[in-house]
Image (cartoon, rainbow, N blue to C red; front, top):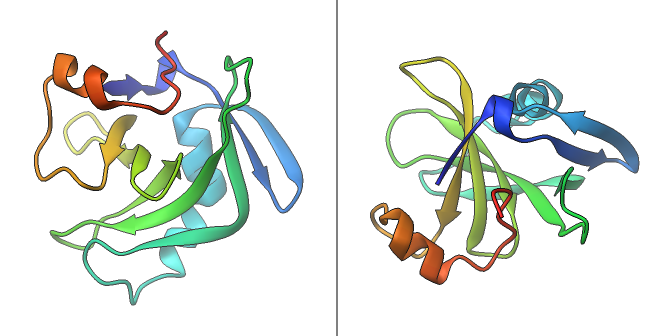
Length: 130
């Protein structure tokens, strides 16, 4: 599942300060500095952003996602991750073709993307499209 910037808003709590109704670009602007401070990361390494949590604005149950930085296996790309648990969450990245920010459902135990139907069967974290 790919979520485009204009389809979702996210609330972020960073150091006990709430930032409400952020677009995906807004999350990148708020947390992007953490990617720059972690230049020594290894491929597929994920590290937490201290005292940082995200919540989808429309989620009445306020499911909490821990904010992390993930270094991709290829190149120097680092993504902001909104993780439900150790394995599942959402990856925030800039689409290299459109230069728009997108969220993609992420599962750390998968080696390749799934079809939407297959993904729906195993996704357990909050889905902003339901």
